[in-house]
Each structure stands twice: as structure tokens, then as C-alpha cells.
Image: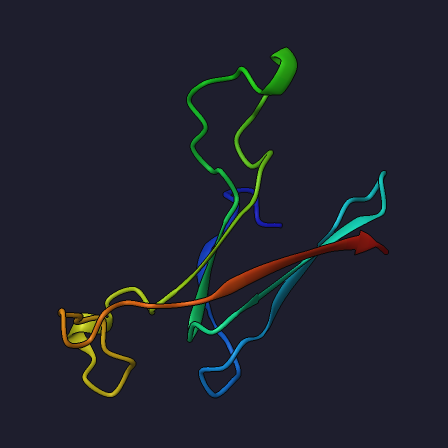
Length: 105
């Protein structure tokens, strides 16, 4: 991982149906999490600017000590008419699906 962490949007393959987007595996526990979604993109963010050093049960948290996967439409899509549209209305609501699956790797 770069020393500054990640804040990157990945273009996902697929045709708009539920598809595999990411897999995370815990090094110590072996617990795996698979994320499936129907979105065209996924933002990967690694908590680059944590401001509160307290975590669960008093555990210390440092920048880049967490990860967030955010399925969605591409950032800046409003300025790119050839990308999936980020404009929604009552006639075109924003509906999407995401599923998390947990297992032992």
C-alpha cells in the first residue's frame, strides 16, 4: 500500500447485475468477506486521515488502519456524459443492491 493510503475508484466489470466486486481476507483470522454489487464502480478508502485514535474496546486506530469499500457511480460522473448517469428523479430512482458474504478462507 502506498504510504499515503488509498482513495481510489475502481471500474467494475459487469452488466448491471449483481457481480463480485471485492474480497478481503483477515491475515490472522482467515475470515473472508466478499462484496457483490450491481454498481459500475467501487471506491476503496483506507482511512487516510483518522482524527480520533480510539477504536473498538479502546484499541488504538492510526491512519490507514481501516478499509472502506463503497460501491457507487464514478466520482465526477456528472461531467462525463458517456459514463453512467448520476442524475436521479422520482421517475428514475437510485436503486442498487449489495451483498456481503462471509466465510473462512
